[in-house]
Length: 436
Image (cartoon, rainbow, N blue to C red; front, side):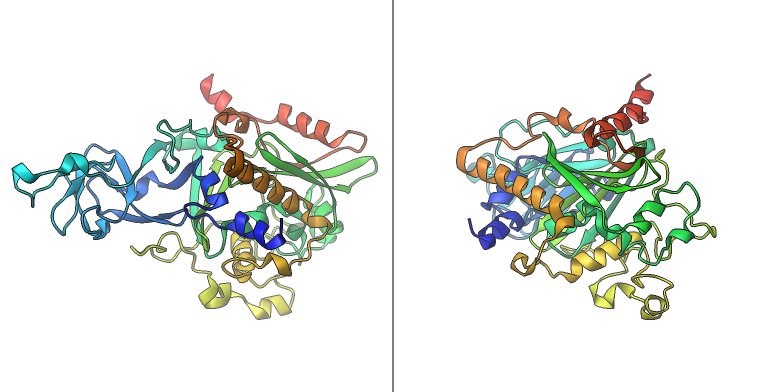
């Protein structure tokens, strides 16, 4: 298989593509529940290269369907959301959340054929403030994934969405590349800047860790490791979960967080972050009491618009060079000159272009998790395409439940998988606590 063919199969997500067909076997987090009001305006939604509209009907049910009216293809975005359905303003044809045509007012009763007309609509589920869409061909959709953070009740769940102007894979790969943390995010930090007991000390002391990588039943796992105090190893574990979920290694295993990199189309991605409000902080102050330069958390958004790519856009974007401050970069006030952790990640992945040219890459030892994950994705997508093999996690959603990431110190004699299991056994379980 050629490198170019591998790249095409990995990044293309539209109907009929190898990766796009695999993605359609999974439930896709598409929007916050709060984005849709009962009988409110329809919302444009782009998922896997398809232009859709989403609306909430009079009873509170959500519909997601092709934006084109099956009559004459006028956009249902212009439609009237009223009395239990969405009515096309062109000729008045009306559709329920399942896409059924329920009214054809411009046809005489004896010529009415609404029972034969159906808009292309997808199955929808809502759970804990998040709207999920199933775009696959199964008559009965698979169960929703049992990703720990997504199971948290509304009051304990912190959710954020951010749009990124690049392919889903290059966006996701920033989360499974730990060595960039010592440069992009903490390049201006020196060991003497770090307070005693902070694990950041080991990242900025040794910015070239070594790695262990393995396949898992849910995707892939890696750990970066460095020597710490005599007889100790500093570990950073992170995960990729099919088809587009990640867990980053920043913070203790008591942090419950998962991130989705949802392909809108080949060159736009919606980042969906789910985390437990009770999680300990991932970034702590330096010895001087100040935060790491450029480490601002949170997001600054442009106002949402109604166009296809108008939701959850950051003020830092390609049109303003991600607000890079060259003076701060030059004088060491910030390694990148770009404010915010996410803004830095956004800048580097968007700077690669809409779809990065994999032929131009020269992967090194720090990219072993990226190479392993690409192979895992290709194997699963091609096995589905060739043999109909169901991808991991579709029919066994419980494989996602007990998966965490984080960093910690451990006795250097402990094997890496054993060190991970020890952290998992000791970690706080908010879902179990809530059930007691």
